[in-house]
Length: 267
View 1 (cartoon, rainbow, N blue to C red):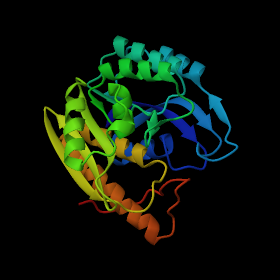
View 2: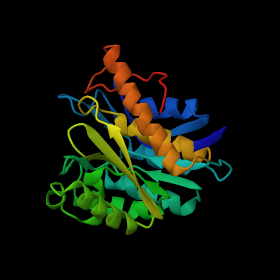
View 3: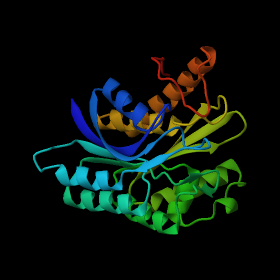
């Protein structure tokens, strides 16, 4: 089995981050080894959440990885601060990975998450230069390209897609942009890999925590195993759509606590 590092947080009682990424990778015959950035007592969007900052643990974990430990890739997600991003950046300078997927978690719906500032965004812009693939949502793509989200969100779909393609071309990496609203019933995912592709899926239910982590894990696992990027994205979006349907049908759908992982058919 292929071996990869996974940089992300651990959240109690929530189907997100490492709680879904590691088992999904395992189902795809990829062993995921965690570098834990923080520990949350419950989902981040709930009141009264307690967080344990694992910055020192990140640094100690990376320092303990000897040259004899060979990995087929690294997947990064939520990091707590600029120090963690900088440490991962330097780690990527010191070790060469065939597959480097960065999910530049910073915000959504035009807003930067309250735990991040301009310095963090700058560090993330530096980090993505080391990637082979990035998976921003539209807000994060705008942050990475220094474009105001408010100026583009009301564009017509064809104009918005053209702008996303132009932004993607300037990133010097493969770009998968997620969660683009086409209308009230459809969501788009775009792929830039020398050419530009758009995948459309039915919008089901309201936004639910952890779907981005599920998406990243599936796409990364598929690509590490040699899958084409478009096929990997198509599989991931299809899986998530059917997973949401299964959760709704079985009454396990919860916006705050995430989707219960199930075996569902894709396509």
